[in-house]
Amino acid sequence: MIKRLLRRLLIFGLGIFCVWLIVFVVFETADRRLPWILAVGITYGIAAYIVLPRAIRVGLKILQRKRVPSYTITGDGLPGDPVNVALIGTLQQLRAAFAALGWSEADRLSLASSWGMIRAFVFNSPYPSAPFSTLYLFGRGQDIGFQKAIDNSPRKRHHIRFWALSLTRARDTWGAADFWQNTKRPPDNERALWVGAGTRDTGLSLTRLSFQITHATDSDTNAERDHIVGELRRNRSIEAEQVYRAGQNLPTERVNRYITDGEIMLARLVVDGDRRQS
Image (cartoon, rainbow, N blue to C red; front, side):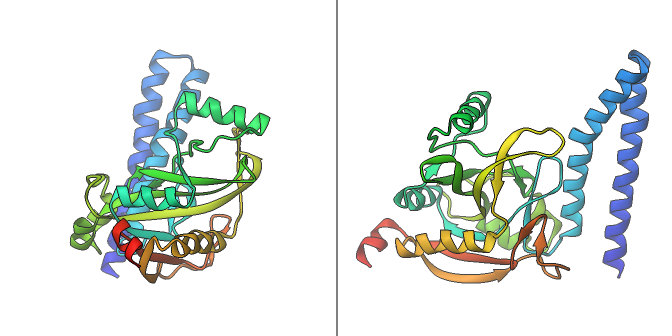
């Protein structure tokens, strides 16, 4: 009860701080220098796209202490794709495993890659390494992502994002607030816990409010998890599979608009030599 009260007080304090920052710092500063309507517009933009998304992410970290992560966070702080796969190994092993399946590593999001994706969308032309939008886990955007087009179309694809977490840090900070504040990516040659969120894109859609062209996704993330793990298993790229439960005490089996059973498949990536011998 005391811990719950402290967490609620922290959330309340965070809310008060946000109101003070938006009203008495951002708005008053803008209002002294700009016409009222512009000051309101700038204040809204900073509050909606900078202050509040970060505050929501901090609040989620506070509320989810001692829990297995159950979903990623969008740039505006809302629940994103559910977490459903976790692999243990080095970055080289991770890349090799998905390359063996015919999956491509996603390009980094930039103006050039975004423009390339738009053209691929419009003309339905192949773009095997199309970029992903940024989702957040452990306080940072994804470290790497992989995808495989369906029917050679950029509008339909299997794809998964991964966030690396140091195995040592995960053991040392499990159950503590520091576990959720791990913004540092471990070295590429270090064996790490790669926490993944896999979903299947099914076509074209429009984002809410901004009406930007984006992917529509299949709501059944359990099927996509089973598809990814099944491909890795058939290629003998993983071993020692275990199932963990995400987000203890979830009140519902729906995360955002997705349907998920809350299970995370954990497996160890196989070294190339071990795969050849098996």
